[in-house]
Amino acid sequence: DGGITQSPKYLFRKEGQNVTLSCEQNLNHDAMYWYRQDPGQGLRLIYYSQIVNDFQKGDIAEGYSVSREKKESFPLTVTSAQKNPTAFYLCASSISAVSGETQYFGPGTRLLVL
Amino acid sequence: AQSVSQHNHHVILSEAASLELGCNYSYGGTVNLFWYVQYPGQHLQLLLKYFSGDPLVKGIKGFEAEFIKSKFSFNLRKPSVQWSDTAEYFCAVSTGTYKYIFGTGTRLKVLA
Image (cartoon, rainbow over all chains, first blue to last red; front, side, top):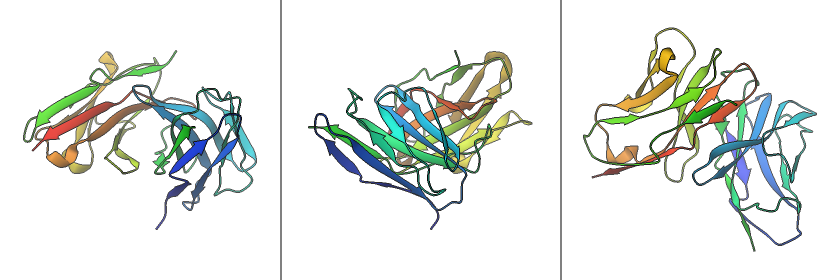
């Protein structure tokens, strides 16, 4: 089945620790995205990538980093600089980053701080 | 700044009631409009979308939405809801860039 997978489903972070969230897609999509979902705030864009080896900051990139070394993979690292990381993180992809393309979402990773 | 407003944060309806969820956006140019739905325990998925043409758009599961350009609105409707429509609904706007702007979501609970 084609789709987007995210792992782990739940992730616990200790103070001062960096953690990495995985996102993989087998849809052959060029564009990939990371969103953060908080109650009452909808989805906010963290980073996006239009093509391999290229990515840009979204609206709330501070404290996060990404890489796009392979077309199918777009991992997100939550660094210790992110002071309020507890949230639900959604990865998405689309055929391209052109306006209006449907985005397909993964199941999400819930990050909790110990 | 571009934004999307969803007026109802929580809606509770009985089965067979009619549904209308409001969505307004602020952007003066050409837009593409979307409604996404997140059923409990499932991925966020596309319900319907508007690109151009007929402003009344039909989606999956009997949902429809009407784009009213003069009101900057894209309200979601369903004539008769079912218990299985219990979910969170997000309106989104895509403009001339890469970017989607999502509303804050509306949690719908349908009572059997």
